[in-house]
Image (cartoon, rainbow, N blue to C red; front, side, top):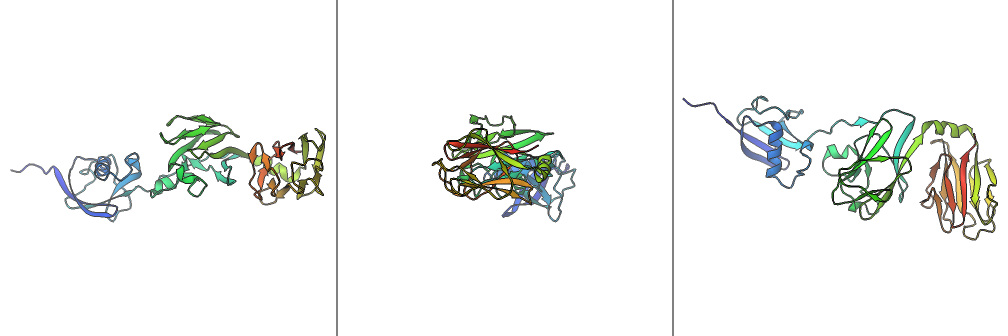
Length: 321
């Protein structure tokens, strides 16, 4: 008398490779079968087996990874589909008084951190990866040198951490190289440099309480150093736009030959409820907290920033209490 059947004859579709015949043990779990498929098709990403799943044809729910094919009631000649797992649910960032984001220095692009893990990298054909992508550098200058999963950000309460994911493509925190799979605390104002092209991101915290304060409080510029103005001089911003430059401006620095006649413009964004500063093509450029501004791309100001106009003049932006 024949013993119990130990194997199943199945048909498996692996992406475009349809109609693959497989003879597998009934005692194999769905997760183990995913691993077997990955070993057979070595062009798939072997490092992230959790990104793939098996489905019974016609079913939307993947086979439970920890159960055997027998427990899942898979029968001879059933058709299975091997494909990307459905995107996993992201953990939203905790509600609080601050919104954290990365500012991409070269393009002045803001990347809000709204879930974890928050991936820094480039998209691929894996939807579960793309759903977690917060900083997409595909179209950034030098972006193709960045790994698809270059680094990730996680958080506990309002403590944020960066974790490099690539062993061969470097991640720097304030110029210190971070080992792959390590974890480093992030603080507002930290600079992240990525890859050989050193794409620069600034970790930033936006205080929602400050946003509300900016609407009703006046602002001013205080001279830190300048060949044209006395240090400590205070210039109230009575109206916006408020121009800065060498001639016929709201703040005129006539004897500073290192800046342009119309160098920068300070304005107020009614929609975002923030003051902004834009370089308008000034000679020798404009910097906010040592970060160069791209011409005609306004950057937000929250109070306390140091603004460098050309090589010799520095002023501090203040919100009046």
